[in-house]
Image 1: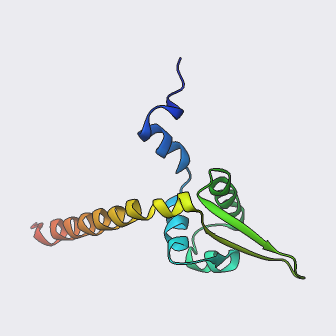
Image 2: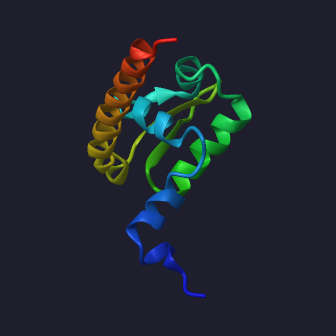
Length: 114
């Protein structure tokens, strides 16, 4: 069986964006550098463990950068990498689709008659 991960752009993108919170984390980092606690506040439904795991995965996939400041207590900031910044166009399209989809769902709810 051949490895399509490095050949198919769709499989590659899906693999890199795996995880329930990947796109949401990338969106929040697209608005600027954030500390872990800021991301926790912005994504209240995610647990610390899952957020940590998602950030590590995105860092490993080179979409975000983790910068540690040598202070006590430790100060860590997350931001998009150059590669992650390229994802901004995709985020914009996801937002457009999401808004259109929500509008369509709302339109369907409002037109139902019983």
